[in-house]
Image 1 (cartoon, rainbow, N blue to C red):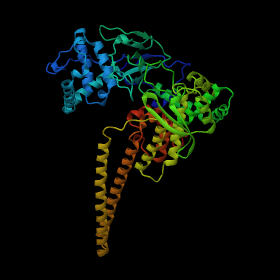
Image 2: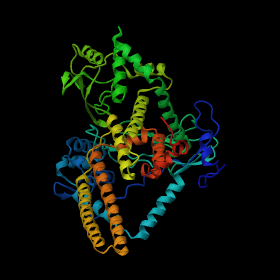
Image 3: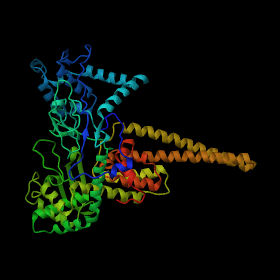
Image 4: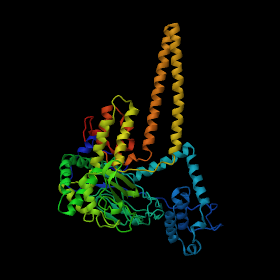
Length: 576
C-alpha cells in the first residue's frame, strides 16, 4: 500500500476517469488519512497590550481575552457597527466570562478594544514586511503541514484533501442581514470530530490527551471527517480536493443529469402548462412553482425549523407578502413583482411578465389570504421533488438551475462571440455571457470597497494611454510629411515603424477600455458561483478551443485541476 508521503503510483491521468466502476452506492474500497489539522491553541496578549473597561485597564481571564480579540480584530469592519452583531457578541461573550467578570462587565459601550485592535494591525503589517528569507521559512512550515495532513490514500491513489484544517474560533458573520451575526463560533475539539476511514487502514491518532467522538468505516460517503458547528447546528465536512477523481466523477455526473434534462424538458414544460388548468389546486400550485423554478431559476426552498435561521425562502416557501400582481406595468401585461430574501439572506427582487394562466392562478392562490400566509399552501418541497423524480430519474429543482444556467451560457456565447475580435474582446463576450447566467441565478455581491479607487486607477491608465496614442498619431503624420518631401527609403521605413507603434498603442488602449467596461458591468455580480457550480465546464473548454483562447484566461490553476476531466474530454465541437 502506498504511503501518504509517496507520489501517486496509479495509472496515467487519462485512465483515472475510466477505472472500473464500483457497485452502486460504494464510493471507495480503501481510505487512509491523518485526520484534521487543528488550529493551534490561543496565545495570550503581551502584558503591555491592555483591555479597558470604563476607562480603567482590566486583566481578563484567558478564555474571555481570546473572545475579546475576535471583536477587537473586527473594529474597523462595518459588522461591529451593527446593533444585532454587537448584541449577539456581547451575549455570547458574557456566557464565557468568569462570574467576577460578569459582575463587572455589563455594558459593551464601556469596553475599549482599541489597544488590542492596534496590536493586531501592527502584527499584520510586520508579517507583510518580513524579509524574504523569513517568509520562505513560514511557507516551508505551511508546506510541511500540507504534506502531512493535506493528502490521503484512496484506492491506491494519493489524493489531495480540500479543507484539511478545522475552522478557527471567531465571530459568525453570515451573509446579508443574518440574525445570528456576531455569535461565538466555538473552537473545534477532537471530541467533536467523527473520523471516516477504511477498516484495514491505520486509524488517525487524535492529538495527545484527546479522543475522537467516533470512528466510522462508511464507504458509501466521500467525507473523511465531520463535526457539527455550534451556530447553525449544521454538519461540516473534510472532503477531497475538487481535483480528486471522486469529486471529478461526481461533477461530471451532475452535468450529465442536466444534459439528460435537455431531452425531456419540452415534455415537462408541456405537462406543467397542462396542469395549470387541473381540477386539483395542489397540481396547479405545483405547476406554477415548477414554471418559476424553470423560468427564473428559483431554488425550491426547504422547510426549516422556526426561528432557526434567517427568514429566507425559496419557491415552495414563498408567502403572499413576497409577490405583488400587476395586470399592467411598464408597458407589459401580467407582471409579477417578487421581493424576498433568498439563500444567504441575498435579496431577490424581480419584475417578470408571466403567461396569463400563471397570473390567473396566482390571483386564485392569494384569494382571502393574509400577507404572512403561504402562497403555495398545498405544496411541499418533498411533493415537488417526488413529482420531478417521476418525470426523470435524478431530477431535482437544482438540476433545472444547472440546465438553464448551462444552456444560457452556451446560447449567449454563440450570440456574443465575434470571431474577428481580439482575445480581450472575446473575453469580454465570455464574461458577458457568464454575467447573464449570474443574473439569472441571482448571484449578487456588494460593491467592493476598493471599487472606486481601482476604477479611478484604471481611468488614469486609460487617460495616459490616450495621450500616448495622440502623440503617436502626430508622430505618424510627421513621418508621412517627411516621406512626402524626401521620398527616400529611410523615411519610408520610419513611417512603417511609427505606424506599428501606433497600432500597438491602440490595441493596448482598446484592451484597457474593455477592462473598464468589464469591471463596471461586474461590480455587483458574482461570476464565480455559477462558473464553478452551475456551468458545465465543457462549454467553456470547447469555446476556448474553438476560438484559440488559452484556458488559463478562463480558469485559474486550482479551477483547471477541478475541471481536469472536462479539459480532457471536450473538443471544440462539444454541445451541452
